[in-house]
Length: 218
Length: 218
Image (cartoon, rainbow over all chains, first blue to last red; front, side):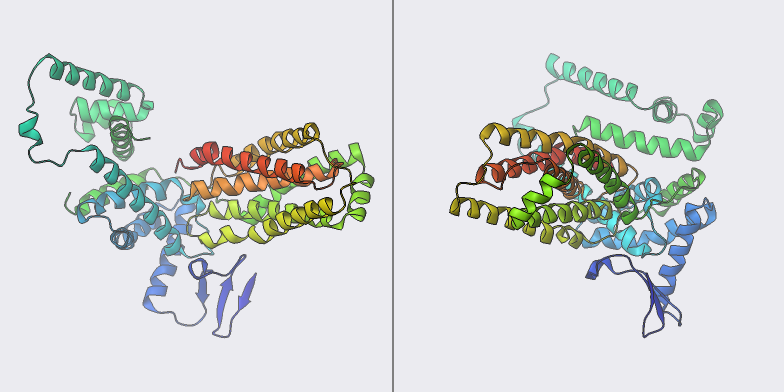
């Protein structure tokens, strides 16, 4: 229910008060630059939900610094922060209908970024446990080019082929055209009849799925 | 990987190219109401079949049973609301405390019922066989109610899938226990209370194991 507060602000809330669940405050009076920026992002996101591409690209571009700062706060290593940014942008795209324009855009975005940062840390932890951190390991276990190593390589190639075959058609097409046949984006677009944007998104999703599959992650 | 702004620009460009208008997620209270309507419809069916007299007579004879039922209803409403709120990114985890007062009332009043039975042991106590019927009742009503709630959450984005699944399980089990009140002929004996607790634990556990996975696809 909207309330007019003593400070002349409209407070829209339908739930319990809590520190991190504050309703989005739309001030009638002049707001600070950061509040104005957030209001602008909220308005862009609302327009993006209605299909405004320009507003969407603006809100995503202006979200990058917040996503990076959330990832840093969660303790994501510097070299993985860009991956968290990419994953967050993809998640934002997938769940953009869950944003409620009467609430804070930054809180919504930060929650998604924080989740993706935790996922990145977890997957690094899993990879770290699997890898052998012994500098003598290579000397102790030289990579003998024997039948078993050859067999293992073949097995891996087979697994990769199977994993590619199981991808959804759009993603499989992107991997085949861009990854395996090494076509340029324009060539692949002309061949498949899809636009380059869709091809890039499909390739990104396919690589993520394959990485998960090959590393045994869900 | 070093910071590469072009990588983000390319992704933003690609996501912009894929942008389509979206239908916003309905507010959590409205989806809670939708789910509760299904519970009310089942309650109406059971009341038509059994009438309200046996239930009211039992409550008049043992008011703590009425309090336990009120606690179960309150738990179901709060846990359902909480599940839907947790499906929106950016909402506080503190919402998970919402069902606690109802839960305490439910457990406390049922426990008091047990004590009273020990003090006056000639009341009608459920046999083991009848308790198993209660278990089957709670579980068999919880399954469709849980499925309905997970379905209502299909467009949501629960960033804490396990906690959301606990709430789905708790809401379904509490709603089923409330429905059981309509056609339940026994006093709150220890065997009965244990059966209810076991049923709630099974429903919550299964939801965490299965619903958590369904809800974590984001």
